[in-house]
Image 1 (cartoon, rainbow, N blue to C red):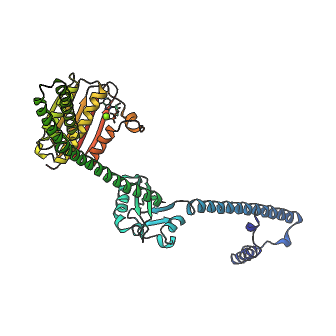
Image 2: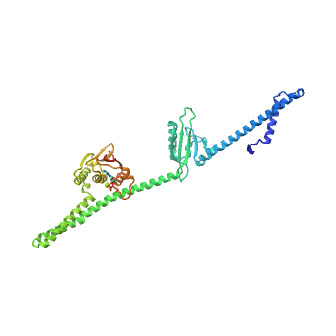
Image 3: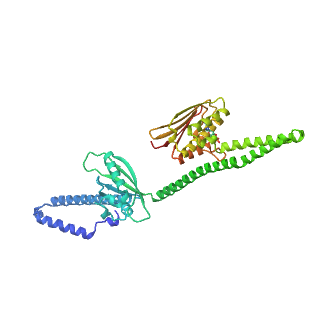
Length: 417
Ligand SMILES: Nc1ncnc2c1ncn2[C@@H]1O[C@H](COP(=O)(O)OP(=O)(O)O)[C@@H](O)[C@H]1O
Ligand SMILES: [Mg+2]
């Protein structure tokens, strides 16, 4: 027994007084000891002593129980009130039935004030609908539900996560138990990540657009500048050559020069075409794809390329046309370089507000996990640039490939009907 639990003298005296009063009040028959024999007296005294010991034992037991109850209360308070998360017990309408001290600290309101008030008022006006739907779902579907909302009050924003459980209970008095966790740090990180991702997306969109513009500019500069000069120079050389037929040595030298001119012009033409194929300007997307297929069929004559077009090409914007062309260029180059396929299907179709490009080969396939996500800097970035082009133009990129089962790439763009 701890000293604090020892019966207090004053209390005992009071108790004794009360017992005496009760004895007098109830008029309990007094024992006539004058007529008692010594044996009777001995018997009664013995009985009284046994009662006294019994009472003492009961009292001790009571005190022990009280001590256990105090310990339980302390544990409950430690576990419930001082838990690292806030606890709320909520009624279906959102009324707070109970709250621990952590919850009252988190909501900056005393527990007394919290109890009986609707939980919504402690959250930001814009997020109250979320809490409302959270509770509606909880009391309708039971089980566990979570939501993330902002606390009411001035900035900086405090984010709380509500994790609630409601057991299926046939009785009328249904409650849910909700924990409150401060997730402000995580939310701030998420917001920062979202911002930097958006900036990165914008940057990569600009880069792709600028790359296309720059390619076009260099192609036009080469075509209109150097190539024209070289063509003029070739013409002069040709003229001179015609006049030198009587001087075989000089003729030979000039013929070689003319040959070099021709090769340089062919090279420039190829570079110009690689930079910005003429089909991309002025012609439709179908003509551009046909031209591209011819290029790859020349590179690999064993390749059969089947084309299916189910699209009104006027509906494909100039910008999207370049995107589709560049994506197809990379995918076809991968097929020729890596797949060992002999069949390719190119499908471009528009239906239900979606423009869909599918490129499917029957080649050896690969493990996309290995190639796309565990890359190092030596690896090519073809597929990554395809993904980026698709994403920055508002499309969704999907790739499915497995060893010996070919590769299929699908890109879907939402377009207006
Ligand atoms: N159609 C395909 N068939 C088989 N393997 C492919 C195909 N497309 C891509 N790959 C594999 O994915 C890898 C990554 O392709 P990519 O990003 O374009 O880089 P690169 O072509 O420069 O290697 C390739 O090295 C190849 O192993
Ligand atoms: Mg590639």
